[in-house]
Image (cartoon, rainbow, N blue to C red; front, side):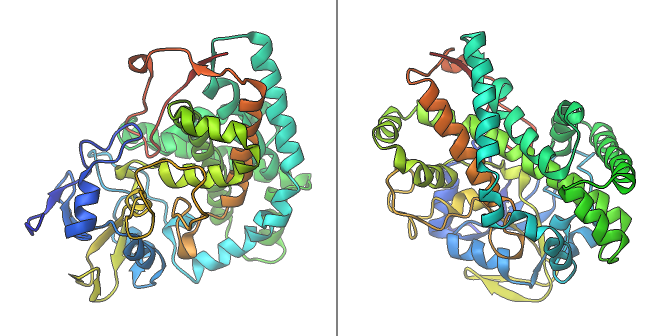
Length: 404
């Protein structure tokens, strides 16, 4: 593949949990390739591991500039696009990004998050108790994958329990590409913002021992963020802490149930679970190609042999980087015993996922408890009976009917 003409992107075969074979060809021949987005915008696509790390960490690739130029938060797949949020952490560069990240970093230190493991285990056990009592078949998404992370992140933020179920529809619209209209996406964003504006007012009157109260303290006493940033930060934490982990619980369970040799290996060696989660994070793509957050080059530079000009748009393919043959041996094989590896599932550089350790704990607890509770777990419907997501930033199954 040496033709320099732009390649249409996203790729059509990038569906379910499969990666389009074109990524491997690009890594070999055009690691930084010219692409054309659905509405004609030109861009560069970065597919190799080292180049992806560079693009994610080099300050010359700017997220804020992409937003300032009025771009969408992802390649435009519809005329409506998505809601651009310049006050969101994912839309900022240092030092603004560093300032906001520092306000919540203490709540996400590995030591502090490890202290939440018993509570996460308690939540998971309770959900699995109800799943067992109801009997098969059971939808994993409904019974475990959705309620576990939403409960965890809501308790961390300080969202009252009666409000937890309100977030699913709002959150899905928030991460939509084509599944919802622009009007629906903006309405969901406004509803989330409105809810948190009201909750901030309540917490101001009655502070609690939660992250939202701490952020209000930073706003009111220390003047470290604006009111708009406070609401946007709260919304972003909720969506990021819920939607992705819920999808991973379902997708990882499906992957293990369809790779029985690896599931048998894990059952025979439960201590392998933390390493297994890392391998699943590497192997199972979370985001659709349409979810790549664009960056803009702030000066002329070279990356992966390509001459990128100031103002050019750059997209990174983290799922492709996680299959880079120069980094991972037999990268297209799921190997739960693989030596520890620095995958890019949580990103890299300033925007590395702040909640990565929380997600790891939730995934370890959820999958460990699930397969321990139901040793004969199996998928309850044929493959063609599964319902796959479409039109969303996150890929995978909407639900997973299980029997035991």
